[in-house]
Length: 243
Length: 197
Image 1 (cartoon, helix red, strand yellow):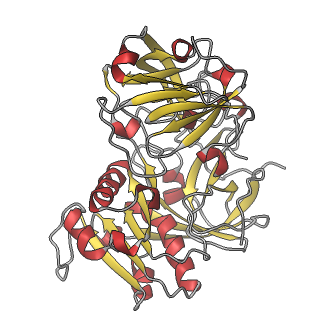
Image 2 (tube, each protein chain N blue to C red):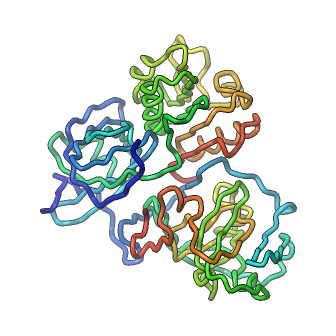
């Protein structure tokens, strides 16, 4: 499997840009010299203005494995500089550069045999979708469970694809913080101990847990997991934003 | 041949000579941690330096508070590309911890509650360049940001400023710590953009 290599900046072209949510788009980039990536890794993306001005941001990769096509899902950050360009402006054929893949810790390898617990808040779903896809592809017989917290059903990236993965070895549970669909078993609200207790693998099942989302979400979820008895060394976190 | 991103640059931010290359300013205080935030009470806290012959010297929270405390004003730079300028901290210089330490090793490994490690050359810790910091902007350091106490090595990328620090072991070689084994640079100078392997 691919090991992380961080070469120099690699030129890429936007192959497609698809709006998935009111504030988010999925971008497919064609990067001829991309070395491939493990599920869960991220990359740096560099934009250069015509006068030479540059800006760089990190994004998780939704795709995995070998291949020169990279899928990113970008959610617009209020007051952002790069994300509004990627969500509103960039078009197929536009050029940019990437560097990566980066990170060797928040990854899932198909040699792992433990149950996989994924817990996402908002656009923190992107690296976890990558892991869910890879887990599915691996035909692993151990289970994978995904808890996905979003503001409203319309804000869910990859909703249809994830629902299509549901099987005897893959469960998907939604947490809606602002507005839930009528069929939802729970009223809107933040993720809490009872949701995790009733839908996640138990500590006794020794899952490897991946939590990704805004800092406050990850802090809350990781704290609950530790309280429930999960081994802190088996909880991998990735946070974005401040507290 | 340059690569240009059509139409990019309208929302650009002002540049600042205090920003290292590839960094952007944030007013926020983002968090980069690999796992859950450990909760450590100052009553249980201790900090231990272990040298090559196995000699250990430890400080309790009260021991640390009895050492001279510095007010530190500094810029901080995270490898994930945010920088904060003009942050204020209180802490104790590592020079005071190393006063009576006898070692000929040139490298250190900082250890944290929660099991994380990061390697820093000894010369980067001494000479008023690093602290054990326990206050940020006039308040006790939040657990999310490494409280009750973190290493503060502001001239290197901020992952070197180990959160929840509880000790330093001396090393003869510059062995990689946790983040350094997982893709990040062995040294991490933000002005040379030493981010990754």
